[in-house]
Length: 122
Length: 156
Image (tube, rainbow over all chains, first blue to last red; front, side, top):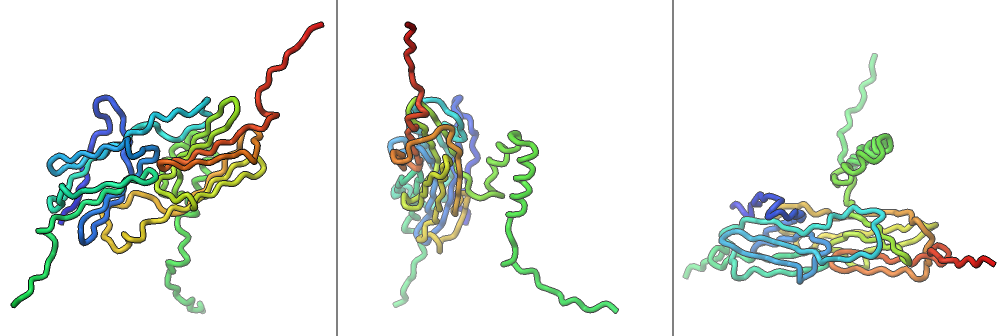
């Protein structure tokens, strides 16, 4: 079964540059778990939209005001965005999200009718 | 007559990984200094987890900011030694997903360590660290003697 095929996306949309967050995707017997790494994004900066079979994750960074001047900078101060195509077996009404220390965990349960079930013979 | 050398099965346990390649890369870095360093940093494949660090400075403090998403506070270790700030830690994978089938694995788990030589002396007792939204911010107040001071010169 093909699951959660990543939808290639352009990094530039409407002139804004987005970073593509690193993700881990797992399949369990109940559904899928997606973890996306977005350091600097709080719960309020998170936007998750479901459209048809596509899920878009956007993580807006807090406008972080570091005092003084930068002596050295490796981080890229841009928001995160990535689009995934969902397995049709996912029950999109039951998707839940959790944000913890910059890591988003999305739980995408499969709908009841596609779960394997045992039929007892009378 | 040649003696028959015993054939040895190559052992995976003796495989040192990419460690030797990393050493080689460091050698090349040293030769070319900056130009390759940026390229090497973007590739975590050979060196392991390499989180992004920023250093800021204002009149009173130095700030070190590190992007360490998804760690536990207890797993971050900060130490100061001879004017060098070391930050290390280990990120662990979610145990509950060990049995699950993996579709995509881009996140890195394991250890990291970074050492930064601080440009000015700091007051060791007043260092503060905060970990929020996967970002660690260490605030290091400058030592009194390192702060810029205005001296009034009176001409008599």
